[in-house]
Length: 400
Image 1 (cartoon, rainbow, N blue to C red):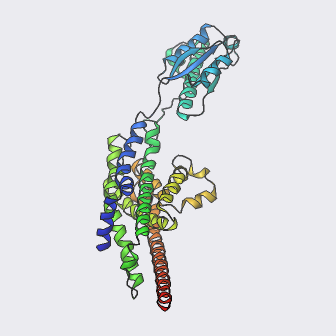
Image 2 (image 1 turned 90 degrees about the vertical axis):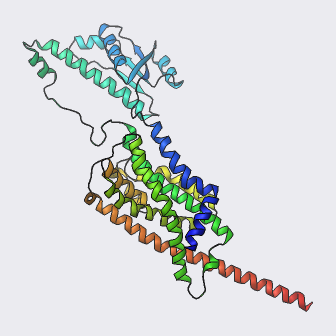
Image 3 (image 1 turned 180 degrees about the vertical axis):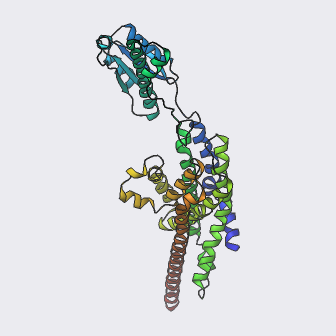
């Protein structure tokens, strides 16, 4: 209890630890969710280069402009002028209609329309390209219907669309970026802020040498367990609340898909939080200064998100990097949370991930005890030799 009490006091005294334990988990999820709350982009500005100047080309432009995702902002004289508009970020794409567009269509040949997109933002690329694709398909169906000379409306519908289908976005009803990526980001925020806060707290304790004085020489390992468990209990009490905020409250506030009940989330968050705590304690002992852990974890945040398999397909991740991803609890925590909360999986479907998180918990607990014991031993060893050196210098001065 003494270790827990001291760690809790130091946690609320240290401004850096307080920021990463309380403020960042509270503010960052709201900031990210608010930015992506619109889910999809609309009215993306594009430039049009119409070398055809025909009724068919004007119809294509009108239909694209009438769509909710694209807005025709400029009419350029040629491609060079349109590219200049893209380079100045006035538009995000170009629709180029060649001069022979309607002529080819009237000759029963395939007409072409070129689409140039700014690839710096995938959401705008998707809106521009899909709008042109859908409009061209609709115009093609209308032309096919007119040339078919059918007797009834039903014949025209079948000719234009012989195979009827309904597009249903699985696990992402809005088809947006927020519902797709934010659940994984929330779980990653929990791990990263835990590691950052624990690293800064451990750096402060190491500078003050608080814990090595609590270890009797006769029972060093038993008391190392007490130190690790006492500190872990302090962090767990704080992140029991932060975890509930991240995985339950924030998705409800921003209407992200939330299919899991609290029971499977509890079974998942318990080993995930413990694994992140002990992982953070191990990492905090590897870095020498408490500022280094911030540079390290911020640097690996984006690669960790990719390696979870949420923003990049897991099947396309090389085997080496998949092996590296197994070191981090976030890999299995994010996958299990997305399957439970966004895909409607049951607890049995993520049993493997939960078992691996418990394995992470016991493994990193053992490693934390080893590295803490080693640091305490080295601290005592250095203190002993400093004391011995001071004693010898004192004897030398007395002889003089």
